[in-house]
Image 1 (cartoon, one colour):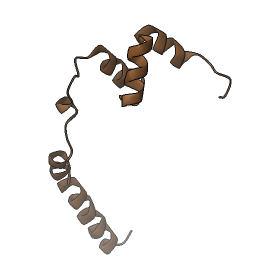
Image 2 (cartoon, rainbow, N blue to C red; image 1 turned 90 degrees about the vertical axis):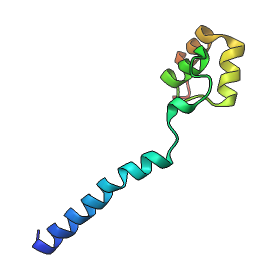
Image 3 (tube, rainbow, N blue to C red; image 1 turned 90 degrees about the horizontal axis):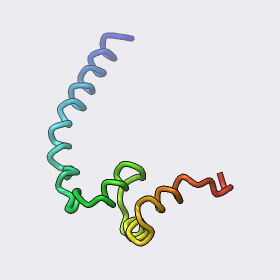
Image 4 (cartoon, helix red, strand yellow; image 1 turned 45 degrees about the vertical axis):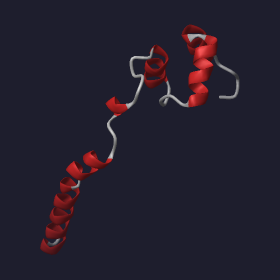
Length: 78
């Protein structure tokens, strides 16, 4: 690695590190989501990729335990 490449890499690393505070101000925090004390939302946050309106209605209509059982059941497509 040449000196020029090393300086360029250091400058790029400094730039990226400096963008962290800006990105944290622009992205909403997860604690701002309403209803985090809702048991169905907590289940979705822990087991799935987060709550969607379709999944929340499914978990509320089936019940948490039945929904979890359906998620863990092998359906033969895998």
